[in-house]
Length: 504
Image (cartoon, rainbow, N blue to C red):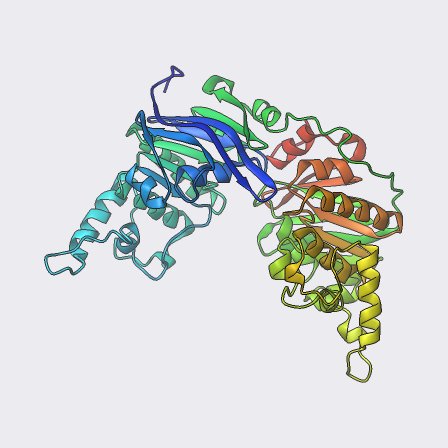
C-alpha cells in the first residue's frame, strides 16, 4: 500500500469520553482507510482501550461524531458495530470453550431450518468456508477448549469475518501467542489486507507495529499526540511521540540513602514466565519502582514474592536469610506486606468496617487465649486513621462507603500495622484522586526515610520518574534493565519497556 491518502472507511471527529475523575478521551480525531493496517499505540492509560470500545459499540462516546463510508452513524451497541462491519477482538479471547468451532463462529447468529431448528450442517459448511479463508486447519466440529491459543485466535478472526467485518480491531493480539502462532497471525493479517479488510492493530510491541502497519496513530493522555506514515515508523519516533510531555518538577521527593539489603531475589522464575530468571535487590530506605507495559510480568513477580504463586526456581533472601515463600502467611512472617492492584477484590473486605480491615492481618498475633483483643484493635485502628488521615466519621464505618483514596489508605494501614521490612505496592494510586495520590507519595517517602524498603509497580510514568530511587524495567517476563536516579527519563524507561536492549 502506498502512502497516498484514500477516502476513509471510518471517520471519528472530536470524540470525548469521561469517567468519574478521569477524562479518558479529549477531542480525538481518527480515520481508518480501506485495506490498511493502522497501528494504535500509547502508554498505559493513554485512552487506546476506551477509543476501541467506542468504535466497537462496547461503550458510547459522551461527545463527537462517527461516519462509516461517508455516512453519519450512531454506534450505541456491539450489534450496531457488527451491522456496520466493525468487530473487536478482545485481548482476552471471548470464546465458549465447551462448544465446537462452528458454534463459536456463529454464536448467537446460528442458521435455522424450516422448523426453527439450528441447521448444523449448514453452519459447519459456512464455518469451514470462513476458516479456510484464513488458513485455519481445525475441523468445524473441534471443541475450542482443545485448540491451542493461536488456533483460538484464528476462531476469533473467523467470527469477525463471518459477519462480513470490514474493520477488525485487534487488541494486543499476540500477548498470549508463541512465536510461531504470532507469525501465522501476521500472515493472516497481510492476507486480509489484500482482501480489503482494514485492521486496527493495538499493541505495546513496537517491533510488530513497525513490521505490520501502514500508518501509526499515537495516543497520549486521551489525545492524538501524532501520526506516522509508513516511511516514518521506527522505534525511536514512536517512543518519542508516546512520552512527549514534560514531567519535571511534578513530584517533590527526598533523597534517600540506601541501607542494608532487605530483599535479594536470585534467579527466581515465575509460573507465568518460566523461561526467564529474575535477579535484583531492594535495600532499606529506598524506593524502587518496577516499570513495564501491560503483560510485562510485573504483577506476576510481586505475587510470587508474596507467596500467592510459588516460584518455580530461584531463591529469595530477607535480611540475608533464605526464606521459602509458599503462601502469603510465609511472606507476612518474613516481614513483607503487599498492597494489591485490585483493592476491592484482594485488599479489603468492603462490607467490614475500617477497624476490622486494619486489624485483619494482626488478628492472630493480637489474640489473647484465642480471643480477639478489641482494645488493641481499637487503638491500632484509630492510630492508622490519624496517621494516614483517613477521612471517615468513625473507624466503625463500613469500608465500602469510603472514597477510593481512603479505601487505599485503609489497605496501607492494614500493612503498616504489621511494621513490615519490605512494603510491596502494586499500582498504589490506581483509581484515586490527585489529592489522595499526593498523600500516598508522601507516605512512601516517609516510610523510606524511616528505613522501610519500598518496592512499587506502576503504569504511570509520572510516578516512576517522580518518586523512584531506582527503576527495574520489565518486558515480556524479562528484567530488561535497571536505571539509577540519574539515568531516569521517559525515553530510557520506554526504550527498555518496549524491548530495547539498553537505555536510549
